[in-house]
Image (cartoon, rainbow, N blue to C red; front, side, top):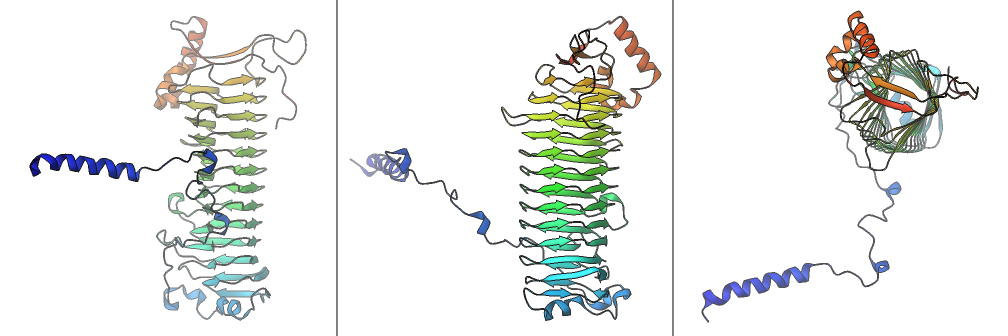
Length: 458
């Protein structure tokens, strides 16, 4: 046999042999299978990975002249022993400051640290430290280096009763867990909302408590890739997103007030989460929305008061995961343009025991969604025209919502500007009086409330 004839056979034999040798062998007993790579890793003890861009150093002459001659606060930090309490004498001090050891800093509301409009004012690169009662001001305005008033880069720290203003970003937590951020007042630089920084930002930060903070005139309060955080009794106003979750799981938002922002709370690509007992109002404008969903799943919306917003809840392809749900119960939707707007959803919304009153439109179904995929039970509708003959508090007939002339502006969003115009009102009246086309059933509530349910806000 010549080389040309046996070489292809030999090559094929070697290839098959190598594939057989490389293929993993299954253990005879499934219990003997090794765990998946990384399945047993304890991420709570994993070292932090420094993802910050290097903070630039600015000489004194590049900082605002108001800080010239001020005593550097860094000298006080360097002189204090680790684990001690630094009771700072009242006064105005020059930044920037880097805290790299556990230390309790007490300002009693009479201490100001000013970085002179350059860079970041205070960096907390340690665990188990406390910063309390200090005024931080005068960061730079660079988005490239995330100029902020306070960078938190550690765990189990306490940030309390700070006043933060004239800063691009306010409080910025990255890869920082189990911190307490409580009772702080944060305001961005006085610039257009699109070029402000975030008032309070979490990035890969878990199990933090954010309570009693006031965020105003900033861009957003955001949580990216951050799980199991608690937002409680905060107040947000005159910003873009009061609170924006992205790829963030199981966060709790309760007892907050979000007023006069473009968007209240937005869940984007999230799993789990609770939004409970919040007041969200005056989310107006072309994109005004109290609560938003984008491909989110398994979220509970309960006991909230949603009033005077362009859209109460705007849901796009949510719930997203198969067999998941979004529960909307015991909320009050009052005096909104549209109370609930569903876009391209495939069912899984459970809407029970809510109050709908004074809204221009209660529910809008657009995109590929169809009525009957969601559950509507026991809601109070102020436009219900049935009776309650046995006085049990439940309507004798189902509440049915049909889309008549509404279909014009539902299918053509640009026509929404005219939805309360006399001509559309007249067209809608004529459609209901003598339909010349089959109206679409938007929803059917089999047991509508005849009187408002107790315990609902308002």
